[in-house]
Amino acid sequence: MNSTSKHILLPKPNIFSFSECLHFLDRGYDDCLYTLAGQQVLKPLRINGEKGLIEISETADALKARLLTGTLSPATIKQYITHWFDLERDLQPFYRLLNQHQQLSKMSSKYHGLRLMGIPDLFEALCWCVIGQQINLTFAYRLKRRLVETYGTSTTYKSEQHFFFPDPEVLATLTVDELREKQFSRRKAEYIIGIARQFAGDKLSKHDIEALAGSDQRLKRLTKIRGVGPWTANYVLMKSLQQSDCITYGDTGLQSAVSTLLELDRKPTKEEIDSFFEPFAGWESYLNIYLWRTLS
Image (cartoon, rainbow, N blue to C red; front, side, top):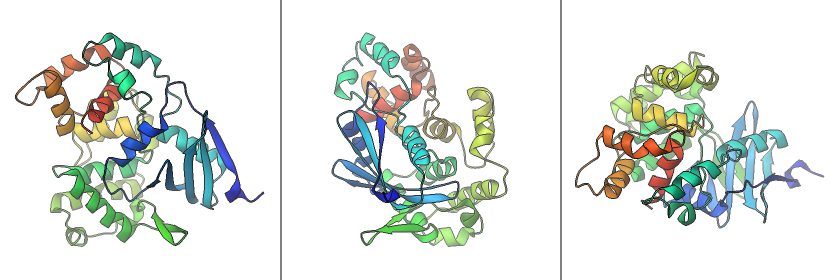
């Protein structure tokens, strides 16, 4: 059988909704790194020299992946999807905490099965955070598309191009003026090129961050990177390293959700956010994304 015709099945965990995960991926924004088509998502992958385009759909009890183009191995595909959809995490302890909370108990049924949709590539996650700093999401997605389509490579399927995020080695060679021409601010251009040079020069990698013991050390290392503050560091630890104890302080969406729940007429303080999250120790990342979900 041709490798591109094989289906790869990944059993669904107990608490899982493919529709909720697709809703998170959609949200009306123009993402250039995956394509939604009904109850399917097409995702180009480039991992350790392998690359290709996969299609993900669902059966009654499994996620179903199919390789459409390229040479990705079944093991690589399974590993990526498991990370992307956070399939190995048991959400029952989090749901017990939700159900015990008077204000939030409805989330366990209203958003049942929503998973923390990751960005497994740390370089991509860092660049995306820098792109999104202090601008609205619509413009952030527009800038990302310009970056990806100008400097990334692609694979073609049924006459449609599907883009891979640019290699750090490519972005490391850019000048600030080149990115300024794409409407990046000077600071954002400097930050992205600087991050790319660290990855290209083997001064920074996901393995390096994972090897550090504990959240404090990881946050300290990430915030040493020019352009990376506490919000970015927490976001990438949550989305790329799948840490469950992250709060995206300073995020306007999170502030809005907490402010509404606390019936405030202002932004909540860090202390108020910490107090609100306190009953969910160890599950802060999941509470964070469920609060984001209330905004859509």
